[in-house]
Length: 204
Image (cartoon, rainbow, N blue to C red; front, side, top):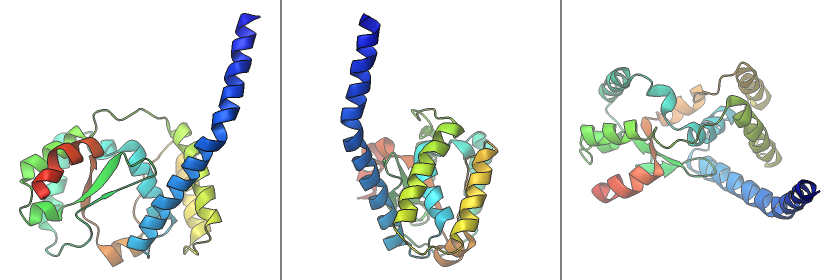
């Protein structure tokens, strides 16, 4: 009897807080999408997906091998001369991570070892989430994006590609060719806590 009463109270509490929580979620997602589209108007659904999945999973998918990650970063730094984009920008609807432009290394604003160490340590503290859980969250995000009527190119094809990937148990997405050709993105994902506590003051 006591257990049944506790379950009932819990369900009532969930019903009471759910509308506000859902409203906050929708507002945060919309704000993240609006910021992305204002900053990068050539974004597609693929690029919006990447924004949100990076904030959920951080950089862990490219740091499984630290040596390989370092070699890849050095090759990327050597592959271009011009830098574009903001020095740092929060991503996703929760803002757990920043995209930090590699220009901070190119322009000697941050030493390479400091940047790379912050990047590597950004995998610490990531809250584990399954692909299935992420897929459920993405479906809610995608529904909000769809309701915004952004006229994104190749929307249905991109949605199918993303859905097929998630159904295979894979979560990593990539920028669209349109985004890469227009903005030439070069950045790494660094945790909000590390960036704001350790790097921001150096950049200022």
